Length: 556
Image (tube, rainbow, N blue to C red; front, side, top):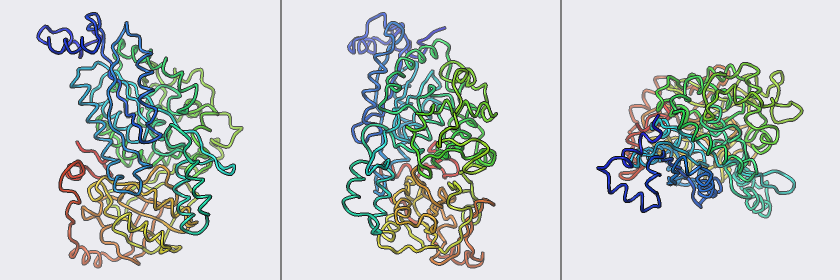
């Protein structure tokens, strides 16, 4: 079998002398033209801890690849830090960056005729973007996660990035001194690695490992650890094996492997962003899996993980008790995984887990089946007059299951943040943040700042928040996002007024405003579709192309 079936187009054809001359210029020899070319796509950049170490990691991976067998070539793509852009207009670019990453990797690998692909990723949009590119290209590929950050610490308490957001809420509500506030910010993020809890980065890395597109332990090994350093050797051998066996993403990503991924992150209490990303992955892979499948799996799967944001522990703690493979072994033993799915090791899930020890329940991080945090999953897909095409709630059980209150309506996140800061939110309010959807935002920004401020102010159990935007994996509380249709498209959320009674029922999976249809029809007559907020550039293109949240916010 030809191992260089794509690169031979430029290396072996006599009609490509300029291409071959340029390859000689980068240091290749004639014998290298017979080897497969491996593109190594790095999302490394200096601007945030999630990605600051990835360029170095990419070089280390490249250096471990046997140069007698393959030609590894590094290229870069973009990243947007959610943590840094949160609460600013920069957050509008976060979700669109997923599709830009996918487009750019696809462009380079196709344009440069690479035979295989390794992606080195950190922050949360990096991962689905890279995976979508791998699916489009369908060449032997491995995703490498840069790992989770170590915990910060102040006054004996473990900290992470969400601690900083919640500290702001404590400060503006008068519960935290300026000194303690400054110390929490200074100590929350001690070095490289993605946000430490079961937020979106660790959710997606775990999902992709369960899906089979990352090596065992890749998602739970901390960024700064000997275990992460030791991965490089395995990566280099695995990618060569995939090339030789011609194992491609289409051989690995199937409906069964998607179900494995969703069931794992349901058990772990993962981010609601996974709904958007997995829907987009399934659309790219042409897999019949929709928003209602999340609800089905959630009904069948208990929530067992005491992990932040709703719990106590971080990914580094899960790593210390065996990491994601031990959780998966436990799931396999309890018939919660499809055992025959192929993975990037060239072996099935069951073969990978054969020598792995299951979770020892003499710890407080993962609970046994007979003592769940919640007997069903935390992800709830809610329908009703507010969300005729669906919405996504993250209900861990700690918030209660039903919330009834009166609407406090804001036409932007900034308006809501200003109201929270100035103590304009009261117990029993349902905060409505609208015109922040995929088209209306545009870019469907995350609402971590207002939800963290609510928690910091001590209102987490007394206030609900609904939005056509989305939430960070760090969000917790009684929150409902991804409301579809969104306000900018004339969804009913655009017609809600201050004082309207809103009922959120996570038992019946319903979200409704208690206003007569006659009144809603009258309001609809006076509603005017807003102009696009951007007239040019990427956000203009995104707002013109993007699908609804219920379909994954895809742009193709």
